Image 1 (cartoon, rainbow, N blue to C red):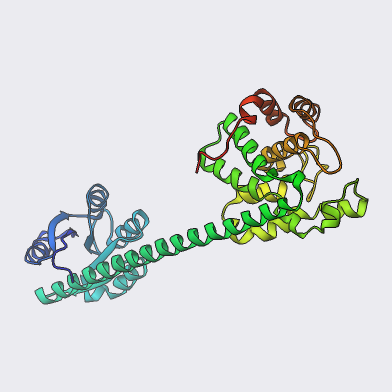
Image 2: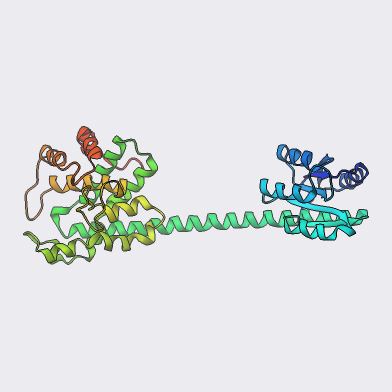
Length: 347
């Protein structure tokens, strides 16, 4: 027992002599700093709610509110309430009921100083053990979280390297993921997304096409239109991507949504799930516009690039069909600042 720690007790009993005896015993205990008393459960509960009480010692048979009812209300108010019951041997069934409802220990009347001291020491030792265990668990959780963050960071770094390697195979898609990321951030800022969400949108933007690692070069780098069968293969990349990033992003739904749903269309004609309207995750709707804009303004092996004005006009024409109309409008209104977005200052 840590003798440097001091505790506050509440004694509840309708017999003043019993309150006096228990209070006198508590006074000589080295760990007791403050003693509150109440003649019934109603007043006892009020004192408990309005004062920092560590332990409660209560009788069972009292007017206005029985000890059993007091225990129930204390546990309801504070599930960690620490309670000792004092009662006569003839009330042993009530004592058992009190223990079932949350009391930790009991003392039978008539009791000695030694009996009371033993019960007090026991409940304080239990409290200190519980606090020590909570502290240990908290430190352990913090260590696990720190390790998890470190591992997640390393895993994401590896995934980002894979994305850059993927884009290096095709000089026409160089920087596509970074561009999708920064355009998404630009639109996110325009609509007032908080930094925490912008960070995850950026993360999802960088990784949104990672599933194309599973697409053969013969399809991915084909200098002509795709056949229906080849297009079906391309349509698998959001699912492949989701499976790749799941270990790192499973607790970051926004990033997962961007990777998996950036090819869904507002009219329900997209893939992989054919989601429609607001059933498409909000942040994926942002990424869909950024993805399309960069694709249109970048040269591809099978076509030349469009101007920014032409890409904006296409987004305008596709609002409500391919794109969320409100987000499309925001993108068009803020195109100048979005196009200049650097996308790196939020980290």
